[in-house]
Length: 212
Ligand SMILES: C[S@@+](CC[C@H](N)C(=O)[O-])C[C@H]1O[C@@H](n2cnc3c(N)ncnc32)[C@H](O)[C@@H]1O
Image (cartoon, protein in one colour):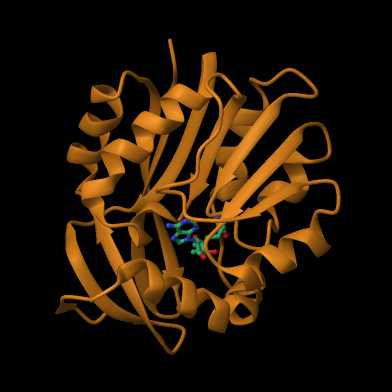
């Protein structure tokens, strides 16, 4: 990530960026060793069949929502229409919404679990607390949260991602964990997982938590 300060409209940058790179991002699936399915398994092992799961920043739905939809009801939200179109194709029995995870709304206690992989870092970090607060409201009591984001401290920076300008914003892992606890969650497990993207090692912070 090349760091240079200050995008004008981060949501537009991300929307346009993922509309452009959705197909290239999908190709990374075979190229990178991803830890996400091991983490997803930890969550799915705790769910009753036919649970309701929300995926914020669902991308194409491949592979997480494909797996979830085998036994559960899945709703995905993504800011990129191209990603949503792919998700409709890949997960025909999923329910997908073109929207912003920062402003989308659902009734209280709608979901048994909410996941968001590799997405929060594309949302300005001053919104992360309110996104977590909304998730808390949308979860049923005992509901689960599983999130991953870059394990870095980026204060709204612009970089290059798969050849397009991309916005990145995230708190360091300790601060992120504190935000999750502050919004009322009980943290069950956290880890930093290193992923190789090309020749670059990128650390990602994973948090599995529960609404008491
Ligand atoms: C790195 S991809 C991750 C996709 C998928 N979660 C996965 O595990 O492969 C990030 C996704 O988040 C979406 N995204 C970024 N900001 C968003 C926002 N504010 N609201 C909804 N989706 C967003 C992007 O369009 C993109 O599809």
